[in-house]
Image (cartoon, rainbow, N blue to C red; front, side, top):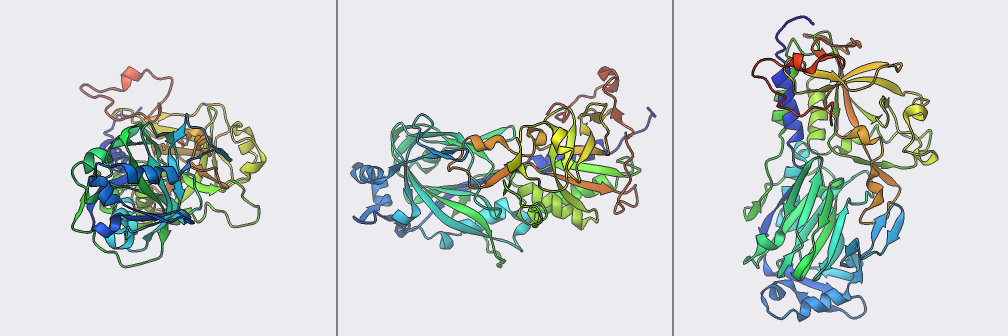
Length: 470
């Protein structure tokens, strides 16, 4: 391999860091007026509970009555509605059976959620919240790990409001990629009876509610969808946000622009890939001849996925959204949705290759090794058609369909979370807006047969995660 200084190494790491550090949630505590704690429930025998009074009283009678008025909560296992209290034990009340005094629109919470989770859409999108359900978790109640059931392409997440009713336990644990976050609303609200806690997260984030040790955990959940254009408003002054900072459009643009401006990164042009961090609800049944739902997906992208897509366009390189399956030692890329209802989604790539527009990939993952930054991640021996250098992988190795369908908060409704990747064909250095040809193996790519130790320079270490292993 020719000896030269590969100056793009820290730039690839920088872009990876910006894309992967964006948290899939936002949370905080908000002080609200007393009327927001009023709750009416029951259709035939209407009742009332003041959750502010119940939070300060030593008499649990009002909360016990509310809990007894709830139905036992079911959950979704595939397309079945299941009542199994070894997996979910909680009370639930549908939105048609209660009326809350919580004035969500005037709290400023939706604007705070939009600014945090949809930072690149503040000028083009607003957030619409649909009241979904009230849940009461009494002593011993819990909900094991699950994902929210997708209901439409425009639905992107959930907002959970936790009232300051006394309880111990019931923390919400979020898991996404290899990260885990615990949101303990009971601890945050201790001694703050005039405040509510909130957490909003994307629908593909796995989450669970830990067992209640004592007391009653009372929550209201809203389904979050994209709304129409509206002038953005600043978050309320009495809002205390707790989440880490989110990626900004400027940070993503600076990182990608610097990488494209580096003469050692794909100097003759090539294809850059990024596995999107989030999965997206796409229809399980895709009717031939109708509009491909993958074509409209760019309007529903979340977090750093949306930032990357829009940044590519702003820098003059055209981003393409594709499905990738990696269930064997080869990778097949699809340029459109296929009819998953007609075959086993756990099947090998053999059937996927038969679809028009399917492309077999020669993939290279970023290793974190300064001397050999790229390593081949697909086996030889297949008739490969396109070389792709992956900045991030995004977990599409699970195949085009996420295995989430085993457990959800509802039976699945004809939509599946699917893994999507972003592909950008870039031109040679100095002419990046041109779509470059497939140049095959790039300088700086480690062959799998080479001695790994030979790739490390003195004092260098593999200080970034290897996509070859993820």
